[in-house]
Image (cartoon, rainbow, N blue to C red):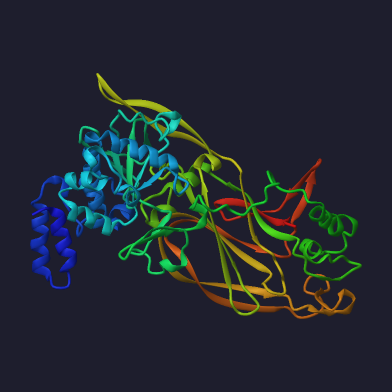
Length: 533
């Protein structure tokens, strides 16, 4: 019996299998060929990750059923690529379309495409995996199964540069280990250490971090951008940021931090002309409040923008932290300065910026913004080239030897900061998404609320903010706990508190204005009001 069938039987009948049955099943699995060895009970993710064991045996990288299925698909794909030039053409063509703003080929989108002799891609893969029923099980366990074409250093390989007469190696991203198991074009099994990068043609089998499936996420209805819909499966984009059909909101006039006259005037009003008055820059920007005109209505001409972000501290350590694939926070929190993980199997970063803000109505909001950002947008990467292999047959590899940070302009609107509706503080959290599965979590934020608002006849009976800062009234303090939909696995990149009363501009160097930045411990970022109308 095929080992995948045994695994499926184990899943299907797990409610009836006792200790003896489980032992017999384990013996049955062990008796299969080495490609199908499963030691799920002995070798767990935690044992590998927390103890830092170096696992060299290829098969021990496949300890979960979803990864065992990926391995079988990898072997089938390799044999199918050898057999079909049209399949190689299809994968290259579809990767170049960047259907989710990365060089990903979602298997569900190509499985019914025709190749030689009128066969479909599904027919060919089924032939090499042991039948259509097994392929269906692979897809049921991995509904967002993806073939990724990486962009490798020094233009050594990419979707654009792939000569389809070449048969690529096949790598498998497990989301459990930072080392990468790989199958050579000759069918040999290798393990690529986490710090190394291939310099030869290779495709990566992985789950898609940008696509949500109804199989893995129960709240599929909250996601938009439908890709696949049938009675058994729905696939949608995790966020509009990954849907090429949606234009992300931004200010087209912005190329750097904006020197807006009203924003810089706020600095002059409170810091130069009247140094004895410790006012709020945003009081003037949003409410036109000055020392001699202390009341004013809210203006919608400005909106808070997430501007420039930049890695801080040890750039190589930040890069490594974002490249961690083990899914274990122990690894992420205990990285040494010498540790190096690379992200060549991942492509673009899936960055999430969440802004938690309390409302006066007792309901908090989590405003989440996602962006597709290339590693080279955040880092300057330098590599060392070397070769490895036999005297008459060598392969190219790269090591990452230097990482330097560089600023990247996200340029994304967040909210109109109206103190009558929202609290005077926002918590910003940055994450790099590794898995699109979502869970509902609770987050608590204690905030201060301004209460100095009222109707003013001099402004046409509009509701206005009365007085500078919190005025003469007593401010309210409230702690709210809110339910927030969050991704299940991500690299936590820290958080920061942004206050309404923070100075937007902090000084001037020559003719250049200096804007306040905030630190999460991993990134520094700019957050400021920008004129939108």
